[in-house]
Image (cartoon, rainbow, N blue to C red; front, side, top):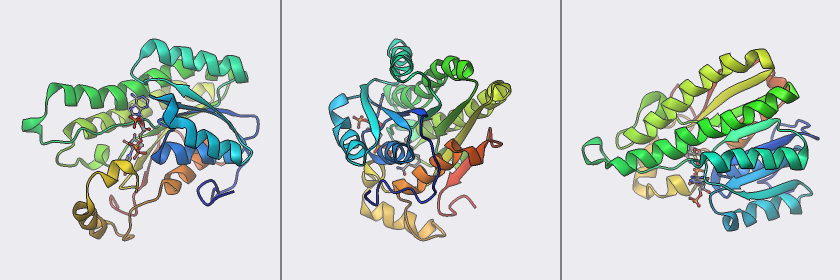
Length: 256
Ligand code: NDP
């Protein structure tokens, strides 16, 4: 196993089936590899199937089970099809990680309608569509874990990210409500609010801005994708069975 696939907590997810959206790179790839490393079969969803090759190859090379699935998370019909395909193939759906997300940053006075709509569409509508579609098989299986990747921007706001922070605050509200709706069905629903994690999304901010951000983080560094993947693994594990409706910040102390 490579450092990327080695989980720093250990749990056995053998026999469980997971869907991870936005699995081609960044946090989604680390999450997919970590769940597969713990024994889950992982359906790796991304908007473009070709970009999933590295994730799938890495999982299979470590002896894990993964399938690439092309799906735009904003496409309601396709999302339902994907959940059906996964359940038909592997017999159940135990874990859903809503991770696909985008940014279209600009100040509110310059924000175009399409920048607003695109971000709300992928980050919030996509999370809603996959959550709704996953509910039926999880209820049938009498268990489930839904883990939504929100952001500290959804908790504290961030200039230039009105669309993004609104979408992530929406994800947090969705998480808390669906947690209450599904608790009686033994399905837990939690959110993770990452701070600044080293991925292509944050690399786009540029070195100067990242140096400034680093100074504001009490632990003095950006997070790594594995920091978030370990938290997902914990929330997916049996150890987290009494946790639902929670928002877990993984931010080096930024919001402390
Ligand atoms: P990346 O941009 O590195 O990866 C996001 C992935 O999602 C890409 O593979 C992208 O595909 C895919 N994607 C985009 N749109 C869609 C869509 N419509 N349907 C399916 N897949 C799609 O992001 P990160 O890994 O950095 O972020 C992952 C999640 O974590 C996001 O929800 C983000 O908001 C959140 N987050 C990230 C933080 C960070 O610091 N990195 C901090 C806080 C939260 P493609 O590139 O082909 O478009």
